[in-house]
Image (cartoon, rainbow, N blue to C red; front, side):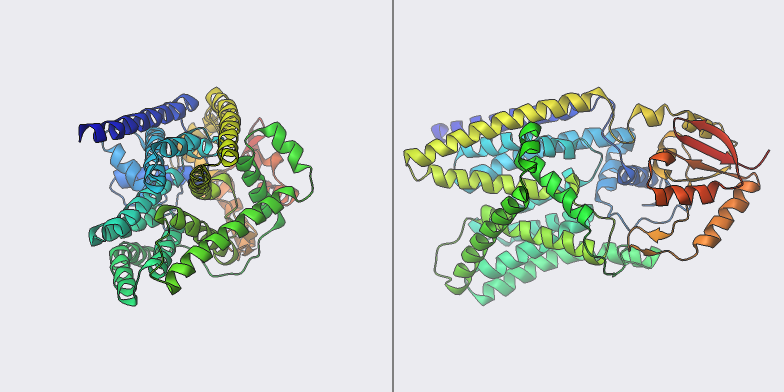
Length: 520
């Protein structure tokens, strides 16, 4: 017994060291805090609102409406940390650094359970930690690290359910799936993944329906509870409207660029390969087709021939999840939210699933015990590790030099922000950057009227009336118009800014920022 436990304890100790190293990487990379974006500030403000006892509200806006567009998971965790006295702005760095280590640890366990190889488990954990894209995803104050944590935990409990047939693991999977949904609405992809897997992999219709019923019953209450709350406080379930808006070429190119960074960690190599016409689209197409054929073959063979061997659960669920997640994201882009783009944070859960499948493939090739296959696995692993470590080191040093996004000194040392902080209390602020104004001027603000709703991509009603109301308010001396970096916007947006500032007094100008007041 002692001889059996010793290798396991050493393995867990090694995973612990990898996790601690991952935490240290994020902390070293973000001495000035995590990168900040509009969504980051929404989560932070929501957490502060919860801590203040006001509920989950848009505290960064003067309207201070209940939040429905963002689920409450990440803000709730920040609020819980805030009970210790740590402000949610600083709490994001604490949480996401811990999550980077925790996710590496969970992946190590997944790799071990999936392949029965401790070496494969450590390899998967290390691949995750040295991946520059996933490090970047954890170095931003966003909800993806927490979403990935709940997803990985759900994969493990789902696998344990098939190993033990104990319903407690299926119920736990349902709860973790609901927590993932309450962190990101894309958690519906997990719900679909596990439901389809239960239907495909169970031996009889009785087991399929029973297990599916238990899983749904343990998941739906949380989803319904949040939807009912939203309907009561804001008369909408998720602040989404069903409107068709096709994918833009710009969005597709953004996705291709981010996927190419993940597939080829070395930037100089990636730039050279990008010059080859349609290379990366072809590579992604081949990977997608290979995964699709593998998942369909494994799933349907078990479905139509229940007596056949069970496919390995963790790898099969990961492959199935990639398609469920893609379907969830693309359907959201097409039907619910035109502002969603194929950015790194959106694609990061797919990267994690791909790493799981990569290690699974490597282990299967290694088990063939042929010198050729084993040599290819070793050479590819060493090459990928070397490139990833080199790329990650560049990213770490880049992040260490200064804050990213709104965490940059250009924002918190802004002369325009200092001007806003000096305004009389009660002065209303209209701005194109309500998030940074909330953080650095410590004031909620009003968004500007615009011609197009970024969520529906449709013309917004009442634009002319909004411009007139803004002019009247600023001209009365009770409000100001603050435009940040207006010269860097597109010509269409700059023309809107000109309309908004027309006839107003430019009271402050610095580094491309302008603050307009009533005429003296």
